[in-house]
Length: 69
View (cartoon, helix red, strand yellow):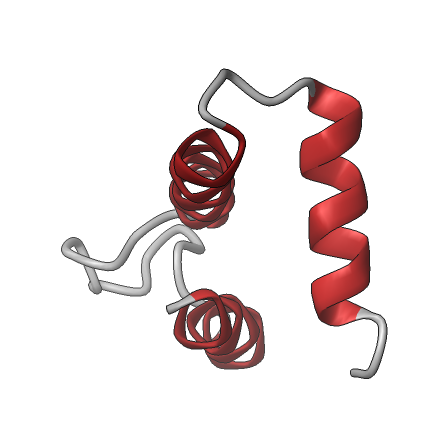
């Protein structure tokens, strides 16, 4: 799921979605995509750790997952 969300972020950037006048109306803004991705990671870590993860844990998990890209 994270890879799909990351791919969505990349395609969003490459397509220039969310810019004024693009007529795309139903496309997520970059901020929405980033927020959704972070919430997904937060939920996943919450289940793995059985507690709310810290912001540092979220950042570290994201870094480890995207390190090979």
